[in-house]
Image (tube, rainbow, N blue to C red; front, side):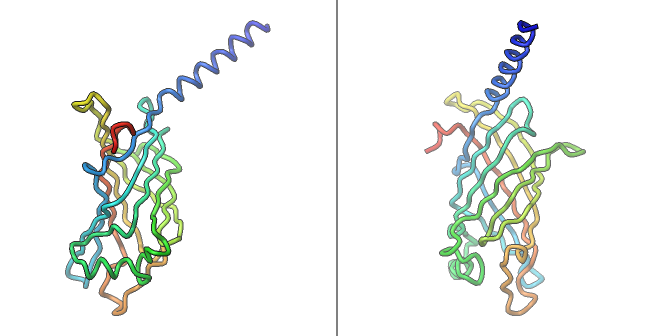
Length: 196
């Protein structure tokens, strides 16, 4: 009986260690990644922009993607809408208040497969000092070895946010700035050793 228990414990230990070994840490390659957004402006146009400074990491379980975890941080002062005056305003307390709340962060809580392919990525998103649960549509576009022989993995994720949920309510005319913001992430993830 003791031998059976010992064998059983050994099997559980080996299984647990093999599960841990399947997780690979990858970080975002900013040169090949993009965090972009779009928001309606004065009913008849759309303002597009991006965040130029961010860092992300994924603990990627290659055997079962739903066991992976995601953590992304964006420096909101790096916002770029190709309009310096507008970007300066977006950094103020009217919008992001970048001096007081310099970072926006997403930390995943779960990943699950969805019908028709792809995944649902759930997590906590903090913007402007407010944390809300959000869900992204996540697509895993695959992986390959780069010229240096190291793993490259690509993901796309998208969601629609209501900026008012995060305390960003500025709109002096009442109709000039859209409430809904589409957020799109296109991330190439690489091993930390290959990331500058």
